[in-house]
Image (tube, rainbow, N blue to C red; front, side, top):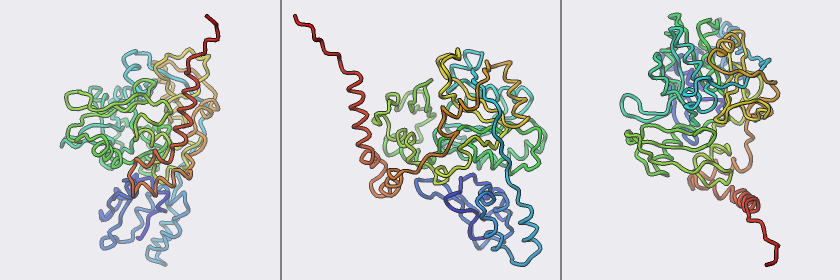
Length: 415
């Protein structure tokens, strides 16, 4: 097997490596540190398992060319092609603005606390939760990755937004075993990761609840860690946690083992001067190639439920000021769990169109602009700070706008 799916469509889910019976697929860094599968041709037996698992080998129409690389004329090839199954999607019929009733739960969450409350529901059913964490692993390595949680005492590790690509590679075998064992399982991740999990379980087991996040695109873990090490001059061995939100404020804070703040910055204002990594993320300069053509950046959802921030919520809704969750139930299973959330969250039914109007990523993926294209060429030579050169006119325009807005009014009264 030479290729699994088109390079620009690969989401880095690593499901291909997980299903390979010969373990001849490894994930290696490409542009901006994003991970892509590499096939060791000497170990590959052309069984087609990787293509059969890959969501984008199906959706991109890449299957035909991949299948042709499998032993031509064999019965296995035809049966393999016939077994390809697309992942179903649906448009949610309703939307909810939601926030946790418990004040502690609410104030410790990035928005309204939907992910945290869902996790508690699953754990109360005797289940397990899979989600993203930004912290140190057992060996002392700091990183952003998915972990397995089976106790409420550890739920704090999943709190907060992580504007970095979280690897699910390390939990796929545990996830498979938990689902097959019949325990209630919650998996929360990006839409492309949700699709990978659905591909793992085509029979859609009732004990598995898949929740995807409204995703704006992802920088790589490698790019983020390099930024912390080189730009912020912080040793990764001294980092214990990173947060990207402080209530409604977008602010990155890096802390050490003793809770000491190693780095933070002023909340983002739109001036593009507060933090380079955050500005690159907000302007979409460091996403995967697949993010700019993501088929899941729209109202057709591929999970049981979609959650995120409810941007654009009508002011008539008496919501608290710390943030509000958006909940979009998709499947019947998702609707049932939305109903259960009402015991622990305030749910206000809202039009689906209102949710889409307030969030670009529920309408279309980020446009790969000329500035973004230039950055991805120049960054290889000049480093990420070349961003400031590419957006200097935008920074100047914004500064002038702020200066005019907050200028002191002239006093025309004569003494």
